[in-house]
Image (cartoon, rainbow, N blue to C red; front, side, top):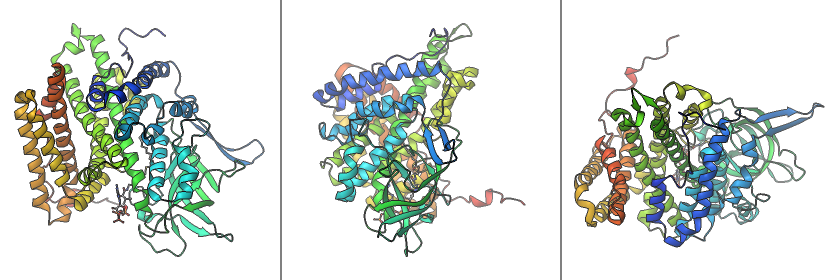
Length: 560
Ligand code: MFK
């Protein structure tokens, strides 16, 4: 299909991604990089092709058929064409398997998430069920429930599309998505001594999958989160019939429309406790941490796609006698987006590396504590950043950015899910606060100090000394802020977002410094250091000192 002379074009999304290529080259051992290069190249080519193809056909959404012609309840969900090819592609490129594969040791998660990053936008959010599949495999492995591990983990991490299982993660009920302690689903023992689930799940993504992990309150248990148990269930019985599951309807959503998100009733679904009959939130936490990392990777992928499109357009579109890219204000706007993206990239891929190190047993206690803290920080910051960059991208296209079939508005609608699912920004900020409560801020401060000390050793560090000082200062301010509010839990909570942004941005900057001085030393490449200076110039801290100011009285109560 010939493209309009002003339409944004995309080349191979791997070969054209300077940031990804240079991160992989610097962080992966050469043999690992060489081993995955061909697959990444293919995924990068697929991403470009998929974007062009999607522009030439009408959008398609999943369809729920609840009854057959004879009135029999069937609840059949028909997926979009891209989703129908999802399992084959995911298995072929090991989008889940690569993360669980021991071949690349501590770099397995880097390998996996580079694949996911390249594929996310083309996948039409097939990455959602894949994230939950990965999370389920991780949670089951951590559970030590040998029978369930043997039954499911091999399938969840399979590279054979005919064996690959997808998992759901059904947590959200009508009572709320954040406060799962209010969950109303009950687990009762039937006459055969088997657990049966009864209740309503209000947001279930990946109902097309084969299994799910879900929370329920066992009979006789008291109220509260600790009394919830984690259950494993398979969506269909051996004859292919739904396992006590009724699909009420598919959600009508702002974005992620190719993803069949359903409301369901559990009417006696057969289920197996993953661990004991309580403390299910604790058992599902490994799943949450993995899906939050996927969220950060996919948010990053969205930023990269937005910037690639906006930059391509800016090189072609002429206004006021010159190309958009030649207008200083427009170029500066895009460069600010790129600088944010480059810093975020460093943070998110560092989390991926730490996860890999932790899972293969070589992370020390500091690294484990750092991973616990950085996971919510990476999720909360990148979720918001993706929305801001997608919104700027719409604007960078002018009126065309508001027209559906350019594909640009969908990027914004889809991006808005990142700060919501898997824990909103505030839930994640409070989770980070909880992590600081248990592991302290020391692991992050120490990691920051080490990165800066390492950077200062590099011959090229001279020009970045002011940046290094700014990062030191930001770390110190965050520590002082925490200390200052340490005896006031309400102030800590009210300022948790600002603290979260500050810590995420500051550690990202420290990682970017290390990267920048290394690549200057290796090949004189100065773009990472330009990104760093631009990123820091707009300030690292977000500690606005409003945490003790009255808030509720500013907000008029509803009038009847
Ligand atoms: C394409 C991108 C991919 C993304 C795909 C996503 C598709 C998603 C569709 C969905 O399912 S969205 C629904 C996601 N739901 C959430 O993320 C829940 C949001 N709410 C929270 O995270 C709440 O903070 C939480 C439910 C955890 C609060 O529950 P509790 O029970 O009030 O929390 P509590 O008492 O703080 O924690 C209970 C235990 O879990 C504690 O351990 P102990 O019992 O040993 O003290 C905590 O330390 C532990 N815990 C909680 N969060 C943890 C954690 N441990 C490690 N990591 C965490 N993140």
